[in-house]
Image 1 (tube, helix red, strand yellow):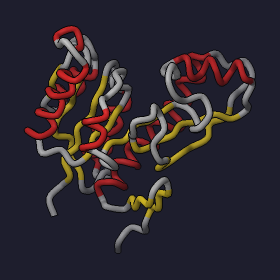
Image 2: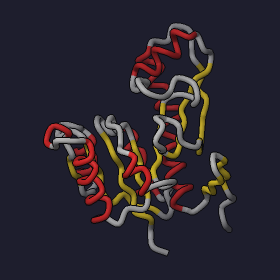
Image 3: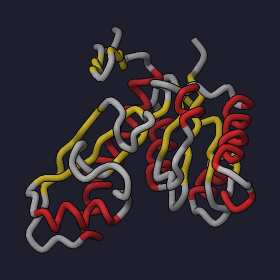
Length: 213
């Protein structure tokens, strides 16, 4: 069985990308390999991470295209060129058009820094998620890995992990702890589950099957 080809889409520092790279190199992702990294910015440090590990990288800067559709035509050509099986959104700060989502239905995943359906959807990204959680006064937050559909953060949930909100937390400290205790754990695991064929979908219901052997 050939390894599943993974594309990781990024916009910034690439800490989640690094965790996927580490998991692939350590064998924690058993049947997948990162074939390409795609960034929305030439300045994203994630590109340096890809370079250090010999992973091909591409930049699709919105300013260089007339429309979102043209951006996504370029994205589709990259995904096709690398025979991509799984698209991972790892801090990718651009909305993907329905055409791409449709072509990669149940083959595109995203990590969101809250327990969906709380603090998600349009306008909830980055520190804004944690600001909203603290403003609401929740005692527990966390992260979610889900399939991507045409509704922002609206796809079927694959994995979730809770993180305690502590007294004196700021959006920055909470963001860091959610990454360390949830995002960095869940995303590589979800990638491994997909590449191992262990995610079964039935509508919005996701079943994780037992590992063979």
